[in-house]
Amino acid sequence: MQFYLPQSISQRLTSTLKEEVDKSDRLEVDIDSFPAIELLLGRVDNLKFSADNLIIDSLPISNFEGEFKDLRVKKVDGQWLVTGGENTYLNLKFSEEELNQYLASREELDIFDKFKMELLKNKVMMVGDIQFFNATVNIQLAGNFVVKDKDTIVFSSDELAVQNIIIPKSLIEQLKDKLQFEIDFADLPFPVKIEQVKLEEDSLEILGENK
Image (cartoon, rainbow, N blue to C red; front, side):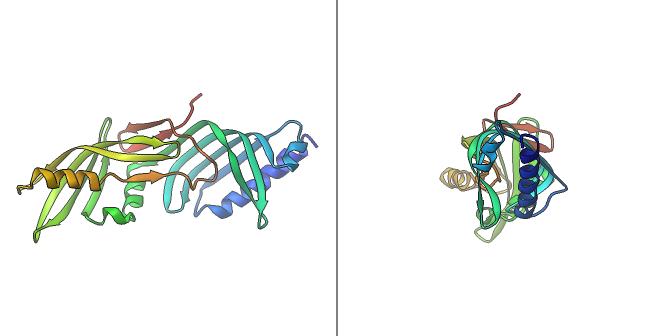
């Protein structure tokens, strides 16, 4: 039983997760509990999750690596769902292209035409055109992603440049406030606790507790 149950439930949970995500090139789940009988009660001591090129609720993730403990799993309508627990290791990676693909669907960013986000080593640049009094104005907004709470990050801007037009300072501040948008990870298949956002050239990493 100690050998068979974890393997069997890992396979079932993997199948359920594959049905839940919109797309994945690779998805692996490995679970461990002692004694194994705990699995029949919906208790998982440790779980490792690894996947490439996931899309979950329109959010594309290049790579998802996570380790979790004290998970609570239950069967709902014939599917295994994780309802509690925490990550002991977390690394989510997004490419610049994937992030732009996702943000293009965000309604709060409809203010922009030709919107693009550039991920630099220590800064995020948002570039796009807006309509201002019947004129097309190019703006560049600089800032960074910061952790808001355990499963949410927010883009916070600290600089805004406007091309070829004078805009009142009060309006600039309104624009900066309006364009502080969040990315919520509450819909991931496992409960996560985010501790750090790391920028690299052309990529973004979301980190939890690290090894």
